[in-house]
Amino acid sequence: MILHGSVEKSLLDEPGLVYQRAHQIALRAEEETVRAQGVSWRAYSRFMDRFIKEAGDERLTRIPPDLDITPYRDEPDMKLLRSMQKVLQRELRHGARHGDR
Image (cartoon, rainbow, N blue to C red; front, side):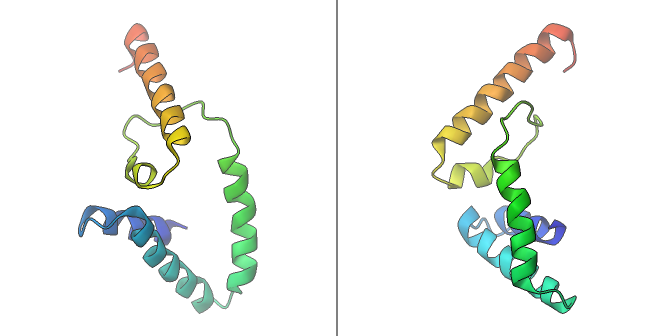
């Protein structure tokens, strides 16, 4: 998972690939790494999908102020992006009132 994120982020930042392309390359690197460890890609994917779906179903309550939103901008999920922006704005207002930021 860390490898996937690192490869993806590097491809977004340096050559400036769009998220979908960077994700596909990172996914292939992740798959090769999993297989090299002698783990079935299918079993690994099923295991990971369970947690990815669970995380995706969570209601957004907090978002790091320095979150890189590039992948979210490249995806057509405007509802998620608007939800993220609302949470960030609320956190910024809350932090400003309490002198946290």
